[in-house]
Image (cartoon, rainbow, N blue to C red; front, side):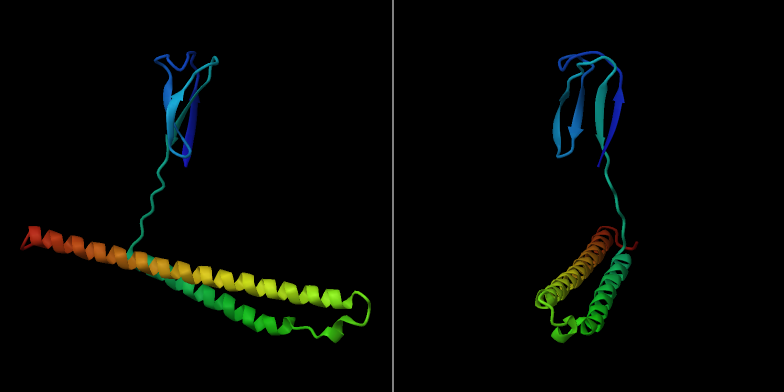
Length: 151
């Protein structure tokens, strides 16, 4: 994320009033000031997130439950989407409509299966991060106890 601010000055890229800017993608460079009343300065903004192993584990549980609920709901609905060929009638376009319906259901099954897999993968990654955080905390506590006995 980048925050953009601008101010008014005259100058060129060699002018002492030129500013160094960070552009998205991490490229540093001089911003030449070639017009009156315009200078662009970009400041990177760090996005910081804090989470405890317990919070990550709870979020992983939500991912697991969500994947199960989506999968269960699809399996329950999929039976109702099995329409027999006779239901489309005997017109010339009926076989095409039936085939389109079957292909659509197959595509939906694939998409929902992929969504469930993504949620399960997110759950696995969240558990791994939670366990890594917990191990890091325990290792840091052990190092502290070793350096400061009696505390």
